[in-house]
Length: 191
Image (cartoon, rainbow, N blue to C red; front, top):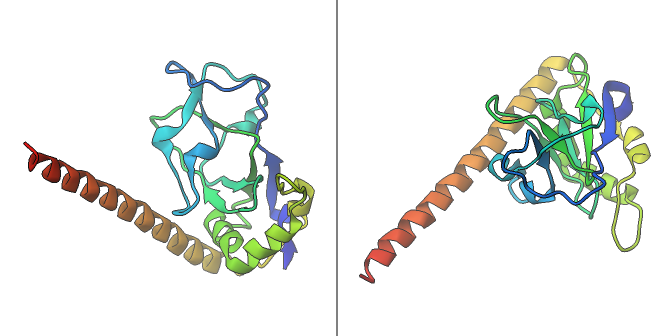
């Protein structure tokens, strides 16, 4: 077991000073809590709003493989970020913690799987502070203990985990399309 901070960079998302308004001509995407599906463990890339400008440090631009962790509330679930090349660069809001792994030592897919294990989720919930709104402190996450198997085992677990997330996304899309088709067919009976 090692400390998470040994093989990763951990930081809070960017705290915008003003209320974000979706800007059609925005240059940068802004990932907020509404873009996360806690049930399926996926990110809705189509719903990500945009901001016209960003003057913060470049570290806040999400990279493929970054792990996003919900820092507020009581559900510290991990999500893997993957950006489509045609989409704008994305900034994560302050409601999240970003974990950027050192890929030569720690596979992001493996880490997301490990964080989302029931035992890890329970341990992270115990680290939350606050009474009304629960928050996960970054310092507590730095000292979170993780098990690190050999790199090939990490890669295998990470790949299987990501395939499962992909399957969940496809199943959700199939169900939505099925419902839409059913509704269109049923509406045609009303004519």
